[in-house]
Length: 341
Image (cartoon, rainbow, N blue to C red):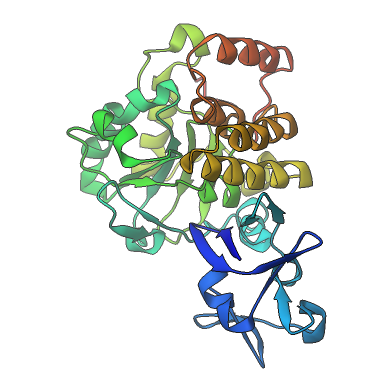
């Protein structure tokens, strides 16, 4: 039977589902998840993960994708004929514990793929944003900062946690810095991002010098958020021109917590729900997305991003009701507090 396997994209895969386990022929594993089982372990390009007990990966003569995911230390969930495999936990811990910016490759709005390594040797801010939030109006302000600091080699890299380029293009007119599309929210998983906008400062050697924080590039919503844009933008300028950073590496490591098992599951359910929505399965999509929301009530990249996928208005009554509940919980955010002076 055909099973859709979602990693950084959705791939139709020939598989058998037995008692909830997704079983694939070893020859089909590369097409399913991009990894190959070799004598030296599970391999992708020049990276191999040793496997102590190869037989444990098998159910009969087929590979169990759940067991493969365990061997790769990646979250996994299979339901409704769809299997979702999260990003490697070690990659995320590279950011949260090691302050090394995880590598990523994502398409721009024209479909051309770009990797973080393209901007190695330059200071950069990674700006996670979305069409379903007011930060979609921030792009011109980031363009102004990008232009102002262009003589230093600085670059803004924006990543939209969105379904399609069509949703972003109306806000991207006149923008020359890269805007990438993260349909499966892999970046929010590897950088443990739970809200947008989230801004990450990354130095020339791809080290995280200031992790996830809220910085706006204009004051359009300052009355709603209480966050003025200028202190944050001024801090970026001081870092780019003078090397000044207001947090120590120890403070940076302590600011972003690793994702809990509940948040990992929420991301998997979100991917399954988003895929079902694309396929026109409204009931299945709603079931998965509401389950994801219940698991991650403080994660706007889950619950607010889910609203348009279930036909709700991300700027409507449901949003304000859930935002009010989030506000009562103290607006918990996985990162540094906003820069206010």
